[in-house]
Image (tube, rainbow, N blue to C red):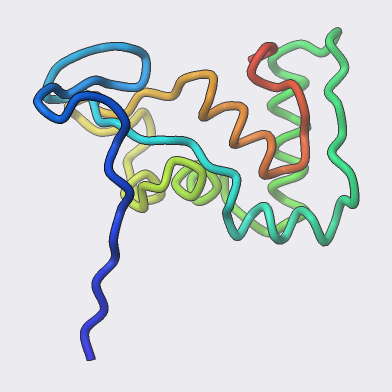
Length: 126
């Protein structure tokens, strides 16, 4: 039995390729961020309520909080990012992204990444 996976079509005009950060061109890939992931399911069982991030935290401190939460739910950052971007290829990409520079991460994806770890307010910080 063969199974076919269906992806939601990207928002926007169908005749143009528009990237996440508003860039246009064939190398930019479109996606919509989601928090409906396995990481979110694991996080909900570990943390009952979402934790607001202290606005005084530095970028390094926010990343450290995210790393600790990823460790607690036994997930890599690559896997969590691929799930919230709905793009399995992200999990196996080399460090620094693909050679064509095709994937862009915007504030919506950062917010979804943090939200699936039960953190609030990360997009305005990182």
